[in-house]
Image (cartoon, rainbow, N blue to C red; front, side, top):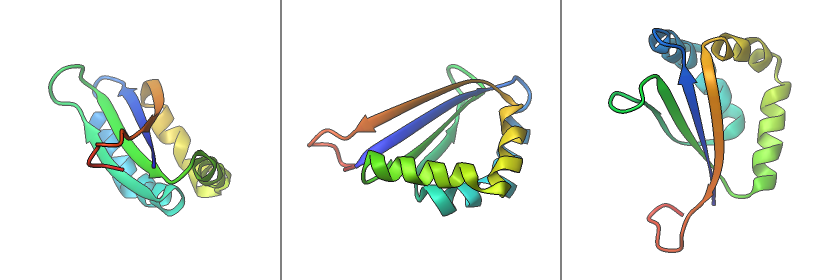
Length: 104
């Protein structure tokens, strides 16, 4: 299993707006295409204004297919700019579970 860990730094003061947009418009659309949402977090201590969400994929090919399909959806194309306008920085990692990890 591959885990995509996406970390966004949101503009100061816009975290409530970002979370509301994702909850009301974005998350169901993402789940429809991307599938396995493992976690969706925001920071309260340490570096503030951070969003971290984690998605699981059986292979990198499946991830690529799902992300392409999401990107082609007209609803996503109209939604994505709304949250992108609230972002200052984006980071993306692909992680692979160690053999002894409880999450495989």
